[in-house]
Length: 159
Image (cartoon, rainbow, N blue to C red; front, top):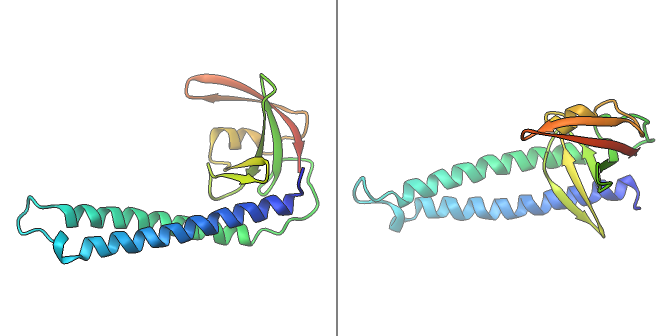
């Protein structure tokens, strides 16, 4: 498996790519919202209003991604810890022994990043799984209730 720094770099690159795409989408939505053809001549012509709502939503998402990118750029990868804390990377196995690689972070929860052949998912301590994993160590079991189901996991390793 790659080292933790290379996974961090993959997350940063994905967020930078997402940011570029969002900047273009915001500019397009803003231009659409203010274009003369979109300004309605009656209260029933709402294309300009709808485009402004879209621009606002994309602008909010843009700010979130900027914040996440800034957060990950400040992370300094240092010696491995034995327990799960912010900036930990861990290997988690479910009841069927399906394994997944997770990065615990304060931002960008739910982000999935392909790093070579391996996918890593960012989760936050605000999520049920993230909350249950905090301060756990390799070999610990975690029970989480998600969407009406009880799920059992084992922390295989912490990086």
